Length: 424
Image: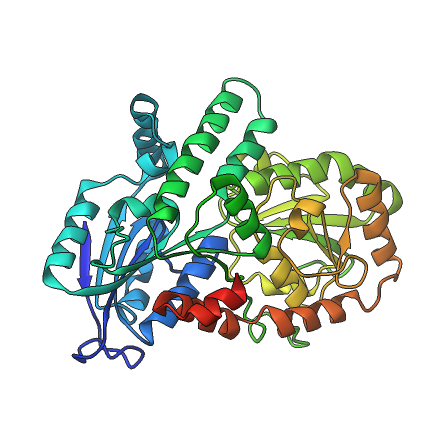
């Protein structure tokens, strides 16, 4: 177990006596912000550090993330990090088959983390607890009688439904296992949501779906993801990573995540041959860290699997089109927000569009069938939809910039009912 004390920082007046203590529990270390959940949790940490003395408990499932501890020390008064190698997580998860609970929760069961939280609660008067991912709710003092700290859960997505999607696309025995996880996780999530002061989701459709599935009566609030529109902005001085004669289609994302793996494999098998017949010099770039064996197997003369890159922006900026052919999805896809912020034409599916307030044909293209997707991309390559990227960036700048989302998040944490009702 690694426990760190605060470093000096101008971001958070941690030692001021009137600053309330807040416990932030994350299933994954919220730095670096290089994938969907870590982008959101890092933004929440930055926001909380402005108003609270933050104590962070999190797991580290990527050994390279240990190098970023100093960035977190500048934001937190105390940090407890526990290693969680993937194999260890899977073995822990299997124990749930004998106890009846969800595998997801068992993966994150750790007595060292529990002991640290108990010790922290004894040393500090915690006024608030923020739980990022429901699996971490097992460590939170959830009480509805008003005697304990105000607890807010950020579910982000309805993961129980995502497991149900996995089950529908799998064969036995995995289909059975995923369906079981969907049932048990929904039961767990319903219980912890009912015991919390408020629960957050990334979009209004996610909020409505959870309410329908769970029937909980506690406040459910939609707080969307954002994108750093200054960082993800076109720049004429940014060089292209592609060969001079290459026309590139780009997909970005964490390439060890099953939904992304499924998306690129489907695109490569069903859509890519149709495009190559029309555009022989086209190249498909799969850009993202930790590509799985199935993704690496796609690499060939016209499909490039890059692995981790130091900066994804050159790939987005110089892409002829950005694709997000998601067949399994929940919430808002950060890859869409980033591609749109870079003013690129984006092509996705109905699943990928969920939760995003964008108009197909005006801000992006949507197609679910291979021929329709190939036709849309081909039209972009021939010069159609010339203003698509510009309108997309305009939408993102207006509705998905981070400051507004962070302000709404802080209001929900503080218990501002007016803001919560506005965003519900």
